[in-house]
Image (cartoon, rainbow, N blue to C red; front, side):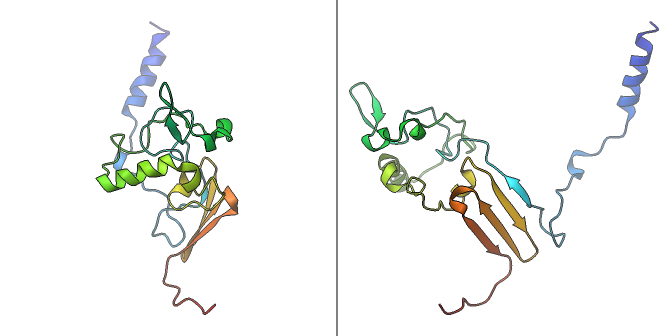
Amino acid sequence: MRKSTPALVLLVCLGCAPVEEPGAWQAPRGPGGVNPDLNGVWQAMNEANWDIERHMARASVQLRDGPMGPVPSIPTLYMGATAAVPPSLGVVVGGTLPYRPEALATRDANRANWSELDPEVKCFLPGIPRANYLPQPFQIFQSPNHIEFVYQFASATRNIMMEDPGPAPAD
């Protein structure tokens, strides 16, 4: 009984401690105090770079029909394991996107010709939001007037003006 009394007192004290309401937390504010603070190093820790929908592991990002089922296409064979796709639960709520028929056809055509159509394969800059899905860190610098995204991939940067900078100067 003597050994359990301090533990019981501790449990009662912890149970009576004031608790902050779950909705009371507010994200730290960035420069100017209006928008959330995005400054820092970020990285997507998932497999969204290969496919944002839920998917199984595949031997290659580009497949063709084989005698026993899909096999890697010839262009991706030269890439070895770097063209393999890891499995993922995806980042889309529900697992699949509600594609229109024409968009689904475009997605399937892009998958069938991945090695010719994917800008990352040719070391071109990926667009947004895909640049944020890459399995490499990126850094955000935020000020009241602009936000700068600095990517490790191809030393890319994105500069977003928060106010209208006016007309572009003549080239």
